[in-house]
Length: 427
Image (cartoon, rainbow, N blue to C red):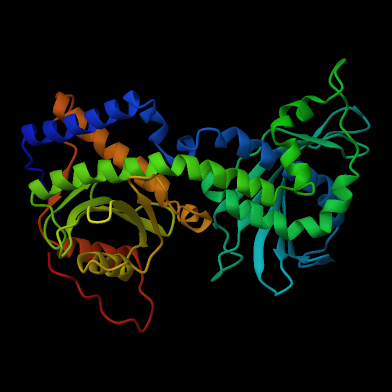
């Protein structure tokens, strides 16, 4: 791998362009710091998601824990619309798997025992427990390291087991998966949730501290039947409709400037690449048959399955698109489609740059590519600015042989047995 040979003047040009774009956002009343990652780009989401998760998990623990806690190893409990199976105890963790009527393992719930008080010594001491929802990958539903969906820490009061919770943890990328999980549990639990006793009011006020904290989501949860559902889902879809416009427009504009810089350095698909972090992040400019310019970014060590984004503008129809791809053969197929001005067979979000209308939906959010694009564009921009200002002498490493990319993908991603060999399109 050879060192980056970009001139400082070229780096200064692209860094200045990125600053100019940030200034434009500020003049239009848009704070560019809210476009640093997907979570903060949604602005009001964090507090909403934390409250939604904390409230739901507190109720689920209150109703469900007494039903499942006595299950034997491997036992199951059949409820309306869901079977809780694969009961398992391992150390201080108890787990069950939610199985839908079609027999599909949908998600797992883990209870981790924290502090367990001596009730005889102090009847008012609280029991501490954390509850986590974890996804069930279709190819390995019991995979130990599957992605976490949501979690919350609870305090149970002895006697009636009434509990309180902090706000939960529910990242925006997992929001719709969490609501899907609530849809599975709601028919079995909503009746008992509706008859739960109220918590003790705080001091002289008519509400408990937790009730006051959750007031902003209370009406939504009531409308959804005690656990978040359609109304909560629509609330976040509304946030997406509003905030998706600046996100996609920002990604398109910033990607174009970086792609132009890459093209000027001769880092074009099929040839040399610019990389960072020892080759973990790889960048190419991509030109289609009709001259469309795209930025391909491969974050090979990212934890999710979608580690590649391809961002481009279409000047003919005034749109921009963001494509999410997995590694291996799939990234090559996505690029081949782009080179031929075809629509890639991959999750894609498109925006009309004139009207701001876009088609970001739950499935695209679930790829986590919006966060990957926003974060890694920011990292590249920060590196370019630091080089331009003289703070550092280099951040990028150039790899001249395209075989590096082919070999790297082969090493990081296993292809499906029986698939045809990768055809690498020429630049």
